[in-house]
Amino acid sequence: MLEIGTKAPDFELPDQNGVIHKLSDYRGKKVILYFYPKDNTPGCTKQACGFSERKPLFTDKNVVILGVSKDSIASHKRFEEKFGLAFTLLADPERKVIEAYDVWKEKMNYGKVSMGVVRTTYLINEEGIIIKGNDKVKAADDPEKMLQEVSE
Image (tube, rainbow, N blue to C red; front, side, top):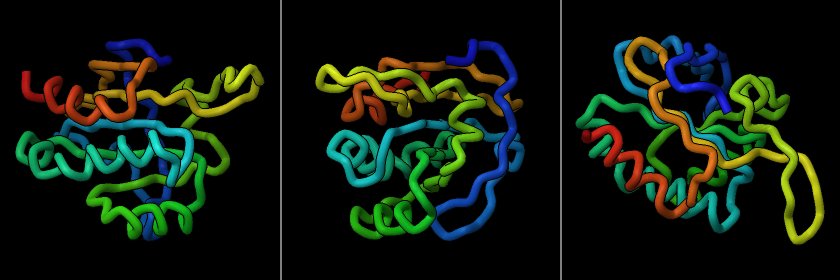
């Protein structure tokens, strides 16, 4: 996980509509940058729907939500449409950003070791500095927890 107080690595990734987003596009706003393992899985769906439901509350606080996984643009589009997601999903199939943010790790699942995305949420301030980071994210609780963080 990247250290609190360090500059968040800039990136360029396509969203669910193929539009390119750069972190630097969001200077002047806080950014919740969250990494999740896979579209349409139970935990990832709970987390995404939680952020989507609270989006107006985040917008009121000048906060942008960006979800990142290694799924394709097409997968993100299906995920967005199926659940009516109201925020940006970024596709990183080459894992460039996933690795830059140090969330590609060895994981233990049902006794089997494999590499994958560790569910991680970063809060980046208006100047592009990481001010919070959590790599022990509980998917269902993360959106409300992040809302409390930006409300303090």
